[in-house]
Image (cartoon, rainbow, N blue to C red):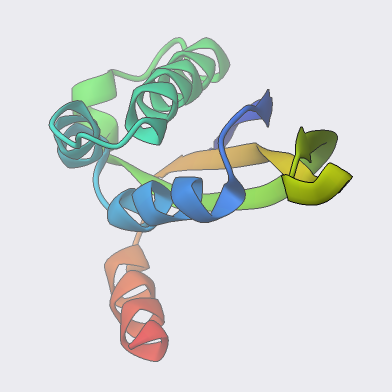
Length: 129
């Protein structure tokens, strides 16, 4: 049984957030939390809170199961671009340069290992390389 957590309008560029999201994709929840805790990037703090929220959502869906026995892992993490604030910055000789302040939306899905899911993760990681 999977649980979803979403984070919208994060004031960080999607490219910077994807760097952090790629670190935890497919990892076990405990390992992903420790990676995010010690990653110095700005997006790691927000992703750590989002992962904790996804774990809480999973616990709310499955009140009878223990968290330790479930072997949760990060099934999917997607970073999409959000709205873009456009600002003008003064430039020489009376001109102006456009500044684009980007934001992103993050969707994180946590699931428990059931059956031969580890083989699927290994295959997907080999396809990414």
